[in-house]
Image (cartoon, rainbow, N blue to C red):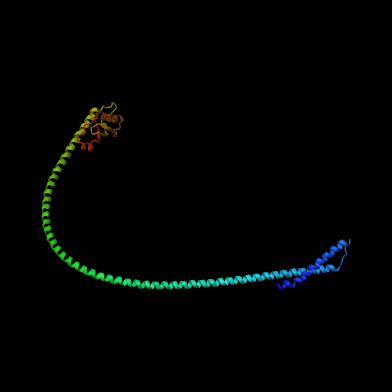
Length: 299
């Protein structure tokens, strides 16, 4: 501010000089037709311009200085603010740390108090358990004495009961042995009877099978019409499937005679002989005649 006051007077003087020069130019322009050249005036104008440049330069310098000063003050203010904030953060952290330590100390204190209470409770529970164990041991001893007496009494009863059971078991065993012997004898007799019946049935089925087979062959032979082209001594094996009534379901040559005409005549003879004479026993029919083979040899 002092520097701007120092240069205000020359600035006013230069400004007044410029105004005077302009006024003189105006007067000379309106009063005289010719322009009078004055040599000293350019020096004065040039000096004034130089002074103005210096003044402006000085003003810019002052402005820059003022700006630098403000920037410096701003930086100082920012540094002060930063330092103040750091101090506040340190103070805040110190307060937090102190509160944390106080909280930790209080927690440790509470924990110790809780541990003391817990130890007292455990001691009391331990004493109660000890007393309860002693009481239970006494009750158990009394119960064991009563149980032992009951056990002995029960043992006497059980021994007597076992003896009676042993005698009853011996008697049941004797009765069972006698019954088993009687059943074995009965089963042996029945087995012998069944074996005899089975042998008789086998023999009966054998005879019935032979008889039925011979009757079937005879009936087929009776229904056979000898082809004119067949030669003597031909034979073929035929498979026949029958119904329980003896009716032929299917017939086919499974071993050819070598003569197709002879084979077809044999198949036709079986079909013409239907129903074939089969045993009335269903089991014998199922096992031997539902599907069977025989050799067809008419001569």
